[in-house]
Amino acid sequence: MSVIKVPTNFNIDVEFEIPEFYRRFLSLLIDFLVQFFYYKIAVAILNAAFQGNDVWDIDDQYNVQWVAIVLILVPILSYHLILEITMNGQSVGKKITALRVVDENGGKASISQFLIRWLLRETWFLIILLIGLQHKSMGNETESAFLIIVVIAYFFADIALVVSSRKGQRIGDILAKTIIIRINKSENIEDTVFMEVADNYIPSFPQIMQLSDKDINAIKSILETARRKGDFTMAETAGAKIKAHLKIESPMAPFDFLDVLLKDYNYLSVK
Image (cartoon, rainbow, N blue to C red; front, side):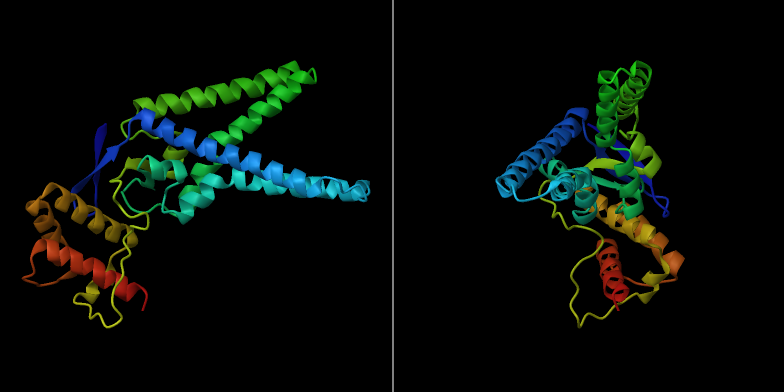
């Protein structure tokens, strides 16, 4: 397993573990099995629901067929997009294998980033492959060969990039500026920069709202990395840079200071 260091705006590198290829493949396989079982169950339910309805005319049957196709295909095609957005960068497979999609800077990926990754998923190229095979059965050898070659080239390029690149990024990750990292299995799936803060909480440093979301994510990543490694110097250096930038004077210990900053942000951002 490789480790990458991502620079933050505070000139401090935070470390992220890049998962092995087999772990990513296992995650993809689990997600495929979830989609496959959904397909089998959905088809069985729809067949049972529509079986014996001979009173429908041709138009009704045509409309029902399209409804069935939508009910089956839409959840499968949008599976990764919906889950990664709603589950903080994870799908079922990623949750089981302790992986997560994050921004290149270590923060939470945006909806637009998830959308770009989704548009370049292998699912769409498998559909192109099926179209190519259909063209071949219809005698359109040239079109079929072209589509098949495009799909094979894409898959080989994706695998080569994941295996050889320092950040383990596929084409979709490169364009979306995201990475897949390995996380601690005990980490809460809802773990983001957001945390529960009491209604009567009194913020200590309102200057925190001068920072961007990217900076807040960087503070969280630095705090987590420093705690995990027991690196007091990292927390102290980050605290000093933030104090200088926001013109804050505080005798608070570095770890406590960074923790309070995150709490202040969470309280003030929803007020």
